[in-house]
Amino acid sequence: MNLNGTARIVPVQKETQMNERDIRFPDREEVAPLGQGTWMMGEDPSRRAEEIATLRRGLDLGLTLIDTAEMYGDGASEEMVGEAIRGRREEVFLVSKAYPQNASEARLPDACRGSLKRLGTDRLDLYLLHWRGGVPLGETVIAMERLKRDGLIRSWGVSNLDTDDMEELLAADGFGWQTDQVLYNLTRRGVEWDLLPWLSSRGIPAMAYSPIEQGRLLDHPEFTLLAESLSLSPARLALAWLLERPGIIPIPKAGSVAHVEDNAGALEVRLDEETRTFLDTLFPPPTHRTALEMI
Ligand SMILES: NC(=O)c1ccc[n+]([C@@H]2O[C@H](COP(=O)([O-])OP(=O)(O)OC[C@H]3O[C@@H](n4cnc5c(N)ncnc54)[C@H](OP(=O)(O)O)[C@@H]3O)[C@@H](O)[C@H]2O)c1
Image 1: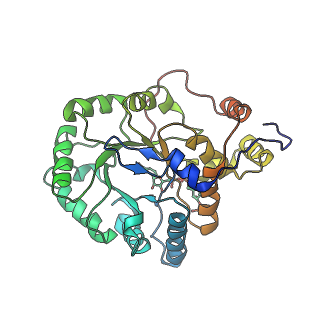
Image 2: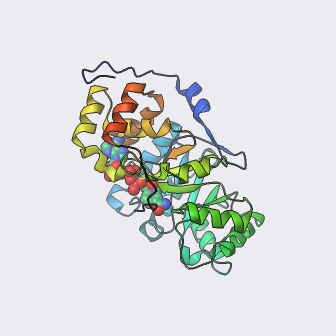
């Protein structure tokens, strides 16, 4: 890479590359390496048609993992996702998340049924505890395993849990969970110090939320200059960097067809060593442990 536009971006065939980069969860389920987020979607009726078209275009392009939550728009995001995947449910790896206050044995079944109803499906592929609250992790494990046994979910995991929480979960569970969904992007690299190595050493993929820092990364002057020099959009560069990291599934949210097409293009980018080094200079990796950040 240099800043005069002679970056070596290696185009690859989509078919080959999708298989090559697919991510495998511990239960051996394989998912596409790049997903679609849906926070802030489904809330504005005037944007609904475009949002549905965007998610469906994402499916066409192989972004078959869709992430939502009961929290998003108080269920409006799940309803919109339900409409978007109608008739295409079998193509989708569907992820939703439960509020921490619903993660108890008494409340999780109803929360899950509510999500299923809004999504218009009878089973989630992955159900996550959105963040840790007052319910003991051991109780959430029991509640999740029961949902799995009853066929409401195929697998479960967690979100926003730091390494010490994961140790606790491991002690409580033995190993039923599939992932930890965490804040991870070029500007939020703290997880590289201990959480990601902890997960990776156990073969657990991490889902990277806010992979383009909710759009803020797109305003970073040196980063956008670098992207321009590589003939990439800043969003595509941010995602390409994450996609090269083993076991990471970025879930960018795109509100337009143009944006989801741009994001899907990240699957076809290979960065060279010089670019990676330059990105490490702009956004240095951590040199000590920090508490897990959340948005
Ligand atoms: N587990 C958790 O606690 C948690 C927390 C936060 C997020 N999440 C999940 O992670 C998903 C992604 O995170 P996020 O929504 O916070 O942020 P993000 O994906 O980093 O950024 C979304 C923003 O980037 C813009 N954008 C997307 N693609 C673009 C492109 N190609 N060019 C220019 N702008 C582009 C979007 O604008 P447009 O809308 O105009 O396309 C939107 O403003 C969420 O939607 C949600 O599913 C989970």
